[in-house]
Image (tube, rainbow, N blue to C red; front, side):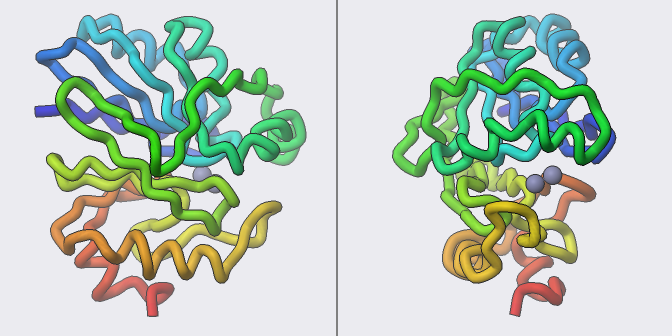
Length: 209
Ligand SMILES: [Zn+2]
Ligand SMILES: [Zn+2]
């Protein structure tokens, strides 16, 4: 059993998730956009060692705290290589939303579908889902039946494609070919807003035709 702690961080309320394995005393964090001290506090309180900092895409609300957390914990940052140019624009992104520019993270892990990420005995599969950004990914935990969707899919909506690097045709392919290929019962934790399921979105999301 993995313990999941999801909480909104930063001015854009990005869903940051800490996933911990109580047996292995190990954890990964997904999308530490901000509030690094709170993440460190949660790790310390549970006695978990942070093994990976996993970023679904390089928008500031998802990656803004990654370098501070890397320096605090020594855990490597994982990002899809196609989002490295976007990560280099963190200063500009900070100006857009009116926050102090965070340091650009040193990325050590290539978050492609070839990555073999594990949390204890639990595989974490990388699904490449370009569209919202060129290097957007979703993280699928087949044993738990959970999908961490970043800004690719939301409850009742999909990711915007009007920002630099966005591609609406690519997003459509990612949703139809990758995300909707998952079982209906899969629980979806989007990058913003409430949880949903693949089945509910398949039936009711007006952006999935
Ligand atoms: Zn985004
Ligand atoms: Zn976002």
